[in-house]
Image (spheres, helix red, strand yellow):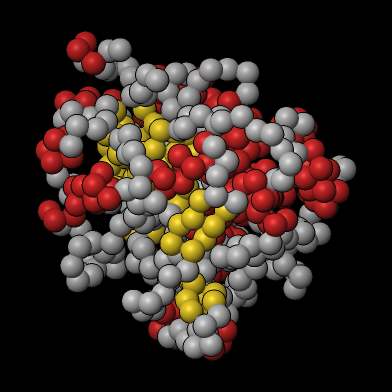
Length: 484
C-alpha cells in the first residue's frame, strides 16, 4: 500500500464525516472518518429523514439484514422530525453493553466507512479515541467490515488495539482492559466484543487487516507501543500542543500562562531524531498545515503531515455551513474579531486533558452561555469508570449534575468549568439535542492554532473553500526531491 503524504485529521464528533474523508481520498491522500460518537450521528441522521438516502444505501450492503430492519424501524423517520422534537437516544455507552447497542455501533462504523470508500480505490481510515473504550471495539469491527484501510487512535495508550485488529480479521473475540478511575492493583475489568455472538449464523470471509497508526506526543510513548503492543505498529502521527481538540497534558506540574493556558516547554516536544530511528513512517501534526511546514516535515524525515484545522472549515466538513462561514469571515480579514481566537482550556474537557476552544460569540465558549446550560449527561461517551465499594461498576462525568458526580464519589472542585463536549460537539454539526425542558444544546468549536492561517486557502472575497483547495495549496511548493 502506497503511504500518503497528507493525512486528514479525524475530527469528532462528525466533523470528519464520510463526505470529507471521501473528498480527501479521491485526491490521493488518506481521508479519515471520525469514529467518536458515530452511533449517535448515525441514528440522528436517520431521524432527520436520511436526506439523500445515503445511510440507507450503505445499510443495503450490511451483512445482517435483520439488524438493519430493526434499526430502521427504531430510528428512521420518513421526512424527518421537526425542529422542536427530541432526538430518540440509544442506550448509554457502558462496559457490558446490551447486544442491540453493540450491533448499532457496528452498523454505524460500517456505514461511515462504506460511504467514504464507495465507488473508488482511495485510502480511508478511521480515527478513534482511546478514552472512548466502551464503544471502540464494535465501531472498529464495523469499520473493518467496510474495508477500512487504516486505524488511528489517540488520547491514551492503545497498546492492545493491534491485537484486537488481528483478532477481528477472523471475527474472533477481542478484549481491552478498561481504564478505571481510582483503580487498585486488583482491578481488572475487561471490555469485550464477540463478533460471532453478536451476529450469530453469519458465514463471513476473513477481513483485511488495516494499518495501525497511533497518535503520540513523545518518543517514550512511541517506544512503549513498539515494544509492548499486542501486534504490529505501522507508523505514528506525532502530534504537538498546537493541534486542535484534546492535547496531551504538559509533563510535570501543571503551570498556567497569564491567559490561563497550560505552559508547554522543551520537554513536551517530541524527540524526532529518536522517533525517526525507530524506522517506522511518521507524520507530524499540530500547525503543520502550510506548504513551508510540509516541506519542513519532509526534511525532518517524516512521510508527511496530518492536517485537521484546514479541513475542519472546508466545504465538505461536517460543521454546519453557518458556523464554518462565521469562522472564516472572522479570521480571514472579512470581519474582525479577537486576535487570539483559540484558547487551550485546561478545564473544559471532562477527560482532564487540555482542550482547545474557539472563541466565537453565541457558543459555549462564552461563560454566560455555558453557565446557562442545564447540566445533563444523556450520552455518556466521556464518563469515568470506577469500581464501587460493592464491586459494581460506577459511571460518572465531571460535566454531569454536580450532586450526581459528588454522590458517586467525585469532588466538587473537579466539576468547575467542565463542559458537556458530547452534546456540544453534536451541535457543531447540526445534530444538537432539543432537551425535554426546551433547552437547545449549543455548539462549542475546537480548532488548532492554525485557525489564524485559514486565509491561505480562501480566494479573495470568498467565504468558503474546498478540501481540494487545501490539498492543492499544501502541495503547491513541494521541493523537487519530495515530489512523488
